[in-house]
Amino acid sequence: EIVMTQSPATLSVSPGERATLSCWASQSVSSNLAWYQQKPGQAPRLLIYGASTRATRIPARFSGSGSGTEFTLTISSLQSEDFAVYFCQHYKNWPYTFGQGTKLEIK
Amino acid sequence: EVQLVESGGGLVKPGGSLRLSCEASGFTFSTYAMSWVRQVPGKGLECISGVSGSGGSTYYADSAKGRFTISRDNSKNTLYLQMNSLRAEDTSVYYCARGLGFGGYYDSWGQGTLVTVSS
View 1 (cartoon, chains in turn red, brown):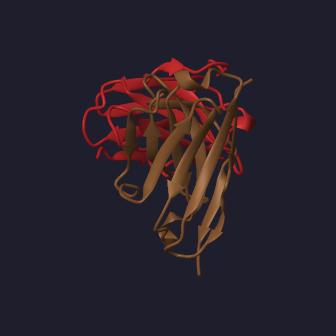
View 2 (view 1 turned 60 degrees about the horizontal axis):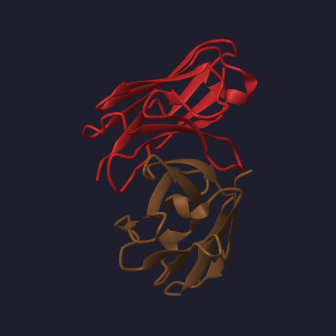
View 3 (view 1 turned 180 degrees about the vertical axis):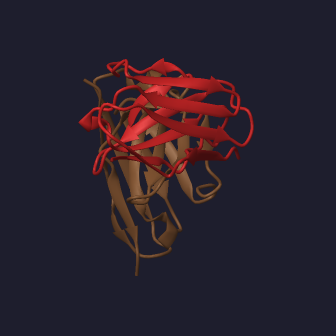
């Protein structure tokens, strides 16, 4: 099973600033990597797939990069609605696994 | 509009069984792989089972193998998860999710149904 590790566990950023979230895979997943946003009481929402392709209706301030074992989600200018928990997920082979999440909080 | 509506959650005793359902609408159900993903409230996400669009291929996490069975009825646009021999550690919110990219990533999710395993 591929283990996904996210860092940091909590990130405090001011609105309007840039946020950079990291995700590592225990072995190469190529570009089979997705990012999700989850707000309290809601299901996850797909942001990025293929490591760098934004999902439908996702604002351009969200961008993903990386391949192999190291990945990054960048939010270029934080809006109030962006404060949430973010998960990465690989889908190279079953079982697909998620990282433990990064909580993005208002500084 | 894509909609996924789970049902069947509730309180069950350890060792008991439960069947979850997920009714889909707004898309051609049979052409999409589907999965069940669970989450202990406030914690991480776990893909526990997946099924191909035809139902011919199924996948399970180790935590579900031998106890859970995923299935689908494409004539009813419904996904199922039969859960047997339930344990306290199965207590979670269970989401059904529509898979893209050969079922690998999930673009639509239901609202979730809570399963509580407790005596």
